[in-house]
Amino acid sequence: MVVPYTHEPFTDFSVAENKKVMLDALKQIEADLGKEYPLIIGGERITTDDKIVSLNPANKEEVIGYVSKANKEIAEKAMKVADETFATWRKSDPKFRADILFRSAAIVRRRKPEFTAHLVKEGGKPWKEADADVAEGIDFMEYYGRQMLELKDGVNVNSRPIEHNQFNYIPLGVGVVISPWNFLFAIMTGTTVAAMVTGNTVLLKPASTTPVIAYKLMEVLEEAGMPAGVINYIPGPGSEVGDYLVDHPRTRFVSFTGSRDVGTRIFERAGKVQKGQKWLKRSIIEMGGKDTIVVDKEADLELAANAIVQSAFGFAGQKCSACSRAIIHEAVYDQVKERVVELTNELSAGDPYDNTHFLGPVIDQAAYDKITSYIEIGKEEGQLVAGGDGDNSKGWFINPTVFADLDPNARIMQEEIFGPVVALAKAKDFDEAIDIANNTDYGLTGAVITNNRAHQEQAREDFHVGNLYFNRGCTAAIVGYHPFGGFNMSGTDSKAGGPDYLVQHMQGKSTSEML
Ligand code: NAP
Image 1 (tube, rainbow, N blue to C red):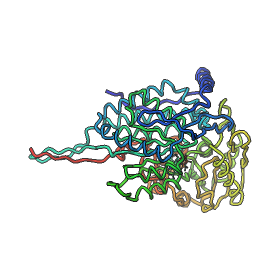
Image 2 (image 1 turned 120 degrees about the vertical axis):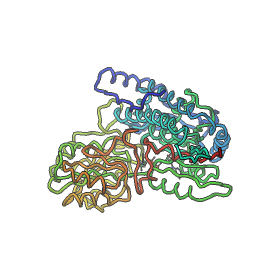
Image 3 (image 1 turned 180 degrees about the vertical axis):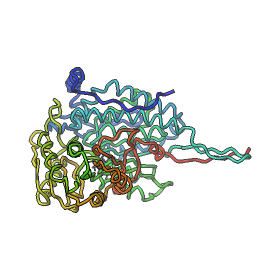
Image 4 (image 1 turned 30 degrees about the vertical axis):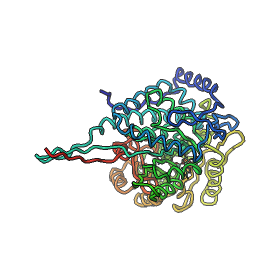
């Protein structure tokens, strides 16, 4: 019997002992910097001459690791292995598969400081964010393991007196899992283990900026007893191996988390039936957001300002759930704006190593260029009231930036920036605030700060986002508590860490026996 699921607690780094453990872990992992990591296909370690270089975004001189790089030939080999392994893995006992996840969760929990320290280095995450990322990865393993145990005997259906009917879920086949760099452990782990625990075999292609953490997950799963060939680790450039894997006729489903451009491309390509393909591929696609906090006139304004600042600048705004727009009732607009600016000016961006800055770096030069170009656009479209500058001499740092007085249709109110930039706009009443909140192509997260119950209920019905929060920020969903995923151009309406998630990786089979 497994104990009921509860989420992994966060670490309080204000406790001296916890701080010391973390500093020690950061020192310890320095010995691993610059190591080489092979691909893993069918349990075999494969080294290529061509390497992905993973850098510390807070210090571009520091190489986290040199990772062997898959190309089309290697991807083909991995596909063959995954396809062959599926013949046996699909029949494996779901309890065995769930046990691998419970053991893996225990291993990561034991090595938590090391994993957290690694995310500080490879992802540029401040301690608190890195700790939450590791906790979420553990949660996915614990939660999906339990979900599989619930689904393993199928769902009850009716039988007439002359028959015995059953409805069971069976796996799909080979899944291609393509993950982003921002939740480099949690999302990569969650999407991979969901595909595996449901009886599929997996080709795991992590983001090229953060491939080392995925190698570490492979080691954990192997230690926990995962057979060779079930998950195959094939980092490689999305532009090179991505299309190949998505188009492959033996790919049964694609589980992707990342940008809208790549997500819509995958959705389209996976929809085309290739020569020799005998199924319609399934696509589980999680994309970006343009997430809004609405502030009503009857509201705790201090809470509102804090919710905006925390949600906008946590992990330098590089969360799909980050608050990138606040729509504020005109009666309280000036007060909220002033407080947001005050709170923002208290924050700084810097190397997360010693835990003294609220913001770390952004992930790479391309992100730095994109965000700073949006800051220039913001200067044309609104009033710059905080931040607006950056420094990419050592790492890629951008100061938390606030623009005020935006038109709801301005580009920085519509397009995902994915950095520490928030735009404020005024609404004449609550109805207009909700209309503006809904006026993007996305529908991922949102929050409403209000003490007006009727307005809360109105937002519950009309604010069209997958994750809606009241009187708190719009980030920090917890597995099993806040199933996560968006509407419209934010994805295929699925909910990671929720009760329906695993079923997307399976197909229902009805059997009927005459008695
Ligand atoms: P990205 O550039 O779309 O990359 C995501 C993954 O797709 C990477 O592994 C990337 O590989 C791969 N890729 C690139 N081109 C590909 C292609 N043609 N075919 C197949 N795969 C390809 O996104 P990102 O910058 O890593 O992540 C940030 C985005 O993710 C933001 O838009 C954010 O909102 C979104 N996100 C959404 C959620 C959610 O739950 N809805 C959660 C987290 C992040 P390479 O690294 O090799 O290019």
